[in-house]
Image (cartoon, rainbow, N blue to C red; front, side, top):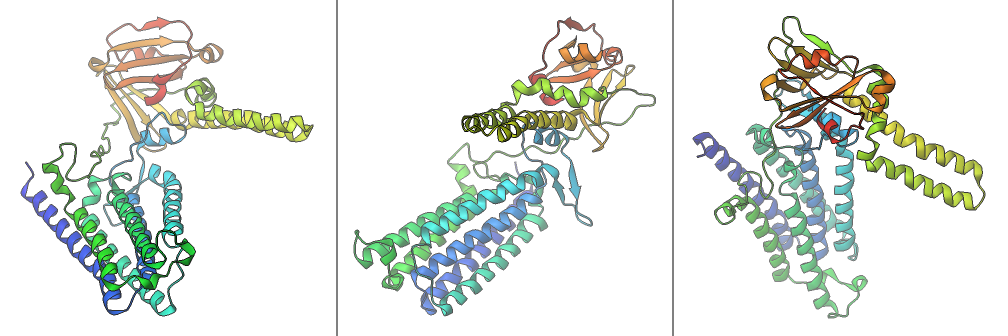
Length: 432
């Protein structure tokens, strides 16, 4: 049952959303009713408002208090996601996760593409409003930007809502806004088409001034009602079991891990050998088909140049097609194991994987919690004179690759390990 504090915060958040929604939707009503805005001016405002919502959604995503949900087996990004490293903002309780910053450029490109596509579809066919109307639209956009900013600061930061979100759930509410602007724009264009020359009218011949005040107010009310439904959307929890009151249609993101990586009085440490920390990634090629596809595409392009006899270009492309996947795999291996050490306390039966660069513990296993222990030699282990340890656990399999001696790790557990023939490490390395 929600606590009194949670109920008060929910009521305050809804009140903040409601006031912001009423204020922002009052601006187009004033423009249409008193400033003689046309349908073009109205669509321009809604398109700009969509951009404003996207900007503040990005702000919420950057400062979300929970780590992004990224598979730790993902090439390059996965090792950083496993470490959950974050940068603290001075004099605040805010933190910015490194993985959020790495995927942020892709997110910005997607949002920019959606915004430009919406503008080209809804605003592109219409003539630009007059200078006076366009000035009013820009002033209204500035007002909406300020109102959205105040709402975000009050609800998301001051009330501490950021602690319950990650960079994905922070975008909650943006998709309904995109749908509202899109369908509202389609409705407006349909009215313009019907009022101009009928169903056979061309988009370039649409006249935004032919739609009268009642129809424009109908479009404004459609947008207003859609925003109000967003404010009270949590009430849908009464009717839909899969609906989450706090996160919309998304599930609650997991909290950041808290693993005790403290050194014991006299711990033993084991680290992968230096070569194994880099070239061990080559054995993971079958489990990163994306890197292999990069090389395959490059070889196909090289074959096309070979048909034309451009052998110098072929040599460069072939070299790049082979070296780039190798470089990516080796870099991924370096990120996973380059600064990792395994802290062992045989007396307490504890094994901790600790990253010295990021100063964080990745996982911790007590001897009673493991369900299987295997020591094996991969082809690279045979070359380097090392051993690879695999530990089975309820959370998955943990891989300790290319250790100079596995005896210290084995000593932390109350069982003799299984010994197996040389294999190529597979998905067991995802959590390592």
